[in-house]
Length: 169
Length: 100
Image 1 (cartoon, rainbow over the protein chains, first blue to last red):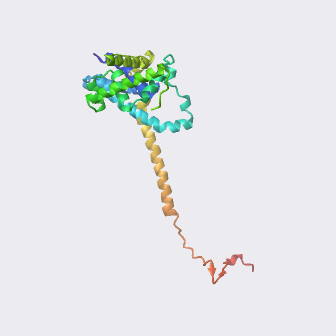
Image 2: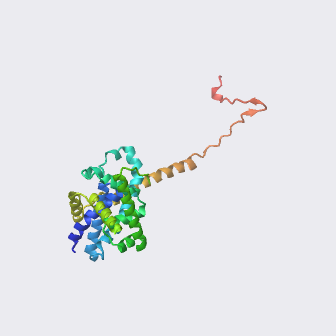
Image 3: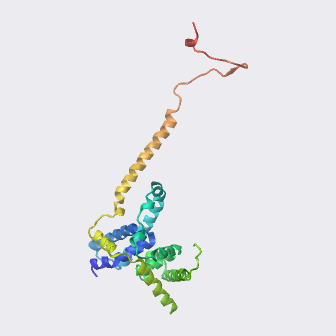
């Protein structure tokens, strides 16, 4: 696999991961672009990493955390300045995806570690070993988290289908 | 088997719903290949700005503290007459205010 192929393969996954974690398309784009830039630099200086996917998602995980922290810090200021209400939402960009809001809500209802493991598995398409390495956990624990998260998401979807109201987490 | 079906359904649904538009992906890839600076990578400038703001704030606080500690100490000792003397008030009138 060459660099261009890796970028084309990883870009949509990174954006999707960023959207799922931040709920904001501009933030997701920024994270994805920064991470891909880091991959390009690494590739040019030291050659391709053993697993480009694990490499980029390890960085993406940290960048997303930084974005969330900064957003939480700046949110009161943004609200005071009236910018929050005018910012483009993910729903604007994904206008045709009516299910997106529901999925983002379901993901937010999951425990943080379960959500992280599931996203790295389903969106990042990392192996369990790679996820364990990125999250600093054991493979068994990651398998359990992913399985639990899938089960919870299925339950949420079933509840939505049958019109039952979910208790907020 | 059920778990396999569940796994396939959940993962496929997530991937399908979260899949970004092609224009977004193209923009991200071309931006990364072009080495363009995203808003996040403008952080160094932002960091300098925050450092300058913090330095100015610290300077203002230090000046305020210095003023409170040093400048507010009276430089002239005032020895005023006691307000009461033997149960009577003593009113001190400057000589310049006394009519000739």
